[in-house]
Amino acid sequence: MGNVIQFKRPDPKQKAKEKAKGKTLCKSGFHKWEIDKKKQFDVKSGKLVTVYRCARCGEVKVKAH
Image 1 (cartoon, rainbow, N blue to C red):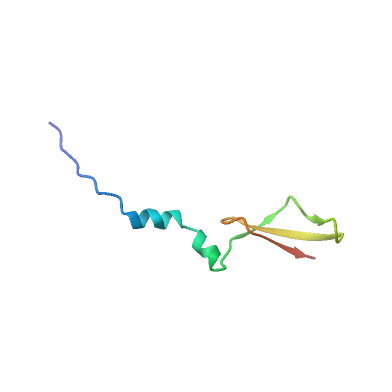
Image 2: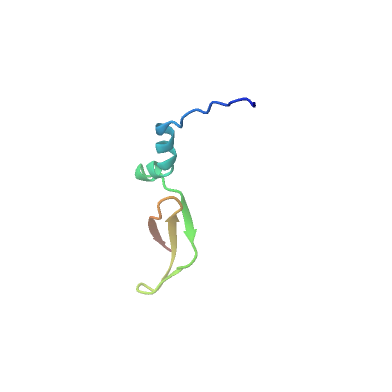
């Protein structure tokens, strides 16, 4: 017969840590802002704008030029 390998049980704390990865940063105000190039012009004000979207949580912020 072959050798029997004992496996360790997964740690429930580690699984929760992986599940919350990135979300806790955004809750603390540390977003990962990326420029969203789909909308570059604000129709109502008639100005160019830069739309930033967080890569982790999807929150949006707009900066007018």
